[in-house]
Image (cartoon, rainbow, N blue to C red; front, side, top):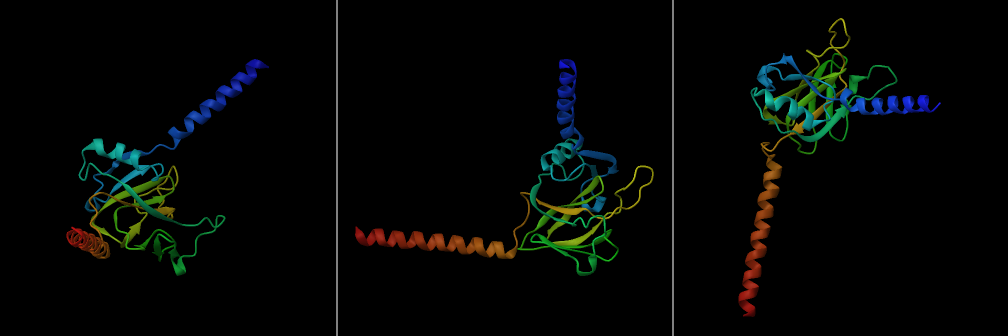
Length: 203
């Protein structure tokens, strides 16, 4: 009985230890010229919610655009309708942004809300995602699941699971952000001048 119990615990520990490895991110070298938009981006296996793993897979390759540094902006996920396809007629709107599709979730447009600007976009479908560094940071653009596969024996173009958006340290702020920064600097300068004038009068 003790032997059976020990074997059961060992199997459970192995299963728990093996699950993070199963969820690891792997770069598909055969479908990755570079992460740049002009090269079509790079296909990875796994989930795109692990930016550190994505960076660790891509950066040592020395491919164009490396090193990449991903900062999570947010994602727009297609809801699970109990196995029924999502109705794209009105698009998909969340607090992060809006997606549209005219072909049942295989391609379309995206738009980010709140002045957010993406430097990278990840298109996730089935067990794969395509990470692309945009030519110029943007708050809108197009997406497609073309090049991603659903099924083991045939590569059928899958329907979208979600779009994940990333920025990096090199993202240029929106004009509204520049305006807020300049206003902030102006207010700080005015407060310092006023404080200096008050100090001179008290002396």
